[in-house]
Image (cartoon, rainbow, N blue to C red):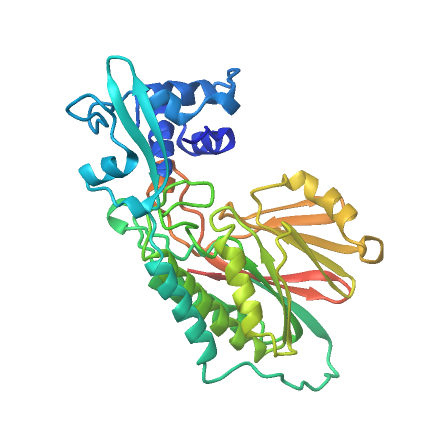
Length: 404
């Protein structure tokens, strides 16, 4: 028995704009049978009608739909025990997590069972492989001793936004292909393209912005954190390991240029697994003094580089016009730095606007257009990996874009 989640339903409706589709997707995400009763209840929730959600359950609205399909009545009219019921219908009793006997006069009885559908086998193998990969790496990161430069030095911001490893796009429908292999190739190409374009600058520090939907899904059911179904390439654990290896490789490459500060932005597609991924990367580089990490679950991060405050956030939460005031409240460096920037993500296209003394800029994404975005017309934005050059004194002096 489960209750209706109003926030999740409204989020689905914001994407689908169709109440029937929302009801079907919601039922699918919860592993329950779609009924007209559920559709009507979800429609009332979308219409913001006054419903007592605390006492309205999906079981209550659906308990008579399939009552004759798996009847719990014996031939003599008595009711089976749960073990007898599972044995009769070949349901693995050990997988039963909770159950409820539902009876109705004149219509019989049946058991409403919640079972442990997801086995541990795949996740066990995933964690074994993850630990094995980390422990058997031939070249662990080492600290590099760097000599001070006599030339003017700059900060390089590297921000591969919204990579969506695990996303599947097919040119037959959307006009472009995108999968795990293409995602990895684009990010590596984009990083090298940025480094090639900044050769004329002496870089003394790199701010690397991680997270921001590095992974496309957050559950074995191929859904985002909130339960929205996605077209996917590969299993969730394979995508995690691909993202882990990609981060290790590009951070190792960037360490050849300068010391790194890594900030992690939690995001809506992979709120859980993205956090775990950032922690794994931090663990991998724990003995390297050339890289520091800010991997907290905070939705807004700030980094100071001389006379610069550089903020970053995914972009699915606080509104852009509130970010400047939030920065003023949340960082102690506000009064000491005149150059203030916030880099946002999530929307996959370029916007840039000054809010008084704070520039808020959204970044492009290298990821392709999937079926849902193509159907709704969210397409044709340039695909890119972006970076920025910041002067110690004058702030952002160059925007580096590697277009695909």
